[in-house]
Image (tube, rainbow, N blue to C red; front, side):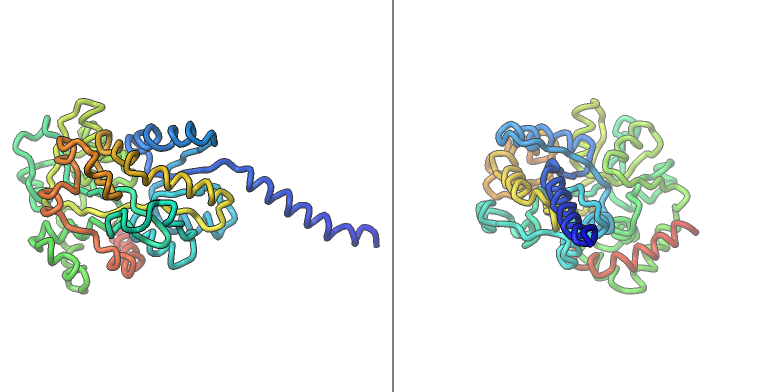
Length: 347
């Protein structure tokens, strides 16, 4: 009887002990790795630790709402603040995977570009997936996605991010679809078939990549002659490794990445403090000189050296030549098209 009476107390004590351990876990921020996260570590993570006296751990990932779902719902919540892509933000918020943000700590929603404002996240960068090639290997390089597909004029392997997003849009543009008509076309069964038929033309020439650091490595090694890549990663490789990698801006697809806090984080308060620190214009302005992604806090733009702007997706000419990622389309179609894409890759 005594033993039975003690069991509920022991169970409660165990829960309290578990909660105490969770509360003691260090704040963990997760981004995309490579030179981009190196820059974040220098301008955000380390200064935040120095200013607050808190300990911060940073980790990296390759994306996918399934990973976040497993963290929140699977009992292994070891991440707090995560940088997510646009559709991960929407899907994760709809599924209750993220905490609501305290916008009063961020200076209010009006302080940011409209695409950066969401109840569950705040935009941190505007970035573009572009066509890139090595100018040291190709003197008269490609000018479009049609050239990317032209293996007779430009022999060699091509790098593409593994997945339907971006890949299908690029295929349609290579097949002559105007950027303004890409999502209208892709929204039809005939448009999807057209994109996969275009991919069929050079399937054997594709080298698939998943992590953001891979495209420039593929170019540097000569494994591919051109690749899709994140614009700032290419600029960073040129700067740090003295490369002559070149960007083709027309047909690039730009989007906004956001910071979120995972639901149930024991570090919600310190996570919000970190996001506020990283969203401050005096800190955001320090990112583009290192990795030229566009900023989201309106006040940060005026603080950036005009010489840096030409390498950013938000430079007016670059922006006009690009295509904005249709987040709603991918939220509605990502699972269906990923299943179709994976089946096609496996054929």
